[in-house]
Image (cartoon, rainbow, N blue to C red; front, side, top):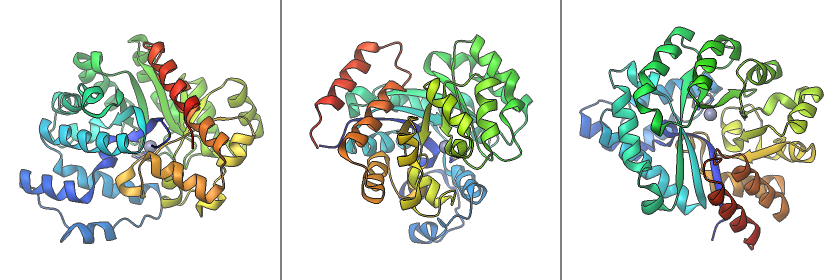
Length: 329
Ligand code: ADE
Ligand code: ZN
């Protein structure tokens, strides 16, 4: 039995496996510029975040109907459950779909057909987090939040993703304020490719409660001290960091140093179909390549539930934490 864990950094569009991409392409009459799944997998050699994002947005063309989003989410939840994920807080990128003529209702209703029954179907509780694309305008983010208003009963929070450098968090001050006023939780990608200053800005200007990635905080000791003091969780994605070349090889990932510094680290998969593994695969990889012992792995699993947006269900959080504490490796 795998270690129970929560996944807090997972882009549902990044769970689109080549096999499902081709199945949906056929179903929807969409032509993909790849001969087969093998040719598509060949394209999974990334130079940096942008080279990945180009393919990530290209493949979304196959996602058109509620059923497509339902199938995508169900495939992820089944794989996650098999790797010990008990709770998943799932990102989605509505602007990438709206731009293709797929409306907010199709995306949210489709995802919810899977998420709404996930506890019974997969044994995984879920939350949904709407992400804004930071390389789009602040006005577009505000329009997107507006389009999401009829669906807020199913949306727990907002996030910020896509190309980081040149798009600092402060650009999105207004939409984060509006989201906070609506009672939405706030997270943002910061310090993946962008500088430590973006992490500080995400905290101070956007009021985020967790930082997605946050890897580059290690360049700024005062920032590390603050993140430790304020118990701000970081949602790290080790296999993603290697594939997008923010870290040369997994054996050099700063996760052990980050844990030693007292940071509240969690381990997640980001875009598992593209980066070579789901949540459990990321745990296995850091155990093997970084030599993390059982107590470190238990700490990571505990952190994932502590950092979850489960304030509306503390009983559940306590149950999950008890499962982690009782786990025998
Ligand atoms: N969108 C999907 N995956 C992402 C990542 N790792 N960083 C930024 N935006 C993303
Ligand atoms: Zn991400």
